[in-house]
Length: 139
Image (cartoon, rainbow, N blue to C red; front, side, top):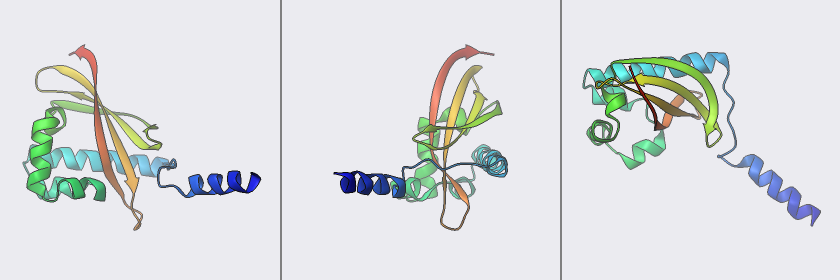
């Protein structure tokens, strides 16, 4: 029984779902990546925006055009924000580093965007998903 428990603990420790920690330097990179991607969205530069997507996102949306269509349709707050500000980095999206961003959309509504990040084998960070939270406020 102890051997089975140890094997399970080792398997969980090796799991890709384990929490990844982020340093302050990583947090600065998250802010730069998000800013760069939003600027690319504002310029309708799909290839530039797509460079920040993690491999899992690229598998689901294999071209920059597919990716941009998803963002335009499903994430208009991110596609054309009026204003955005950065909050803390947490691990609330499945243990992965998560940058909180407060977004004011084009209609004056306030949102919280959770940007999940995944560290790549080459040491760079990519956006692994975005979750929008309706905070119910208006500017």
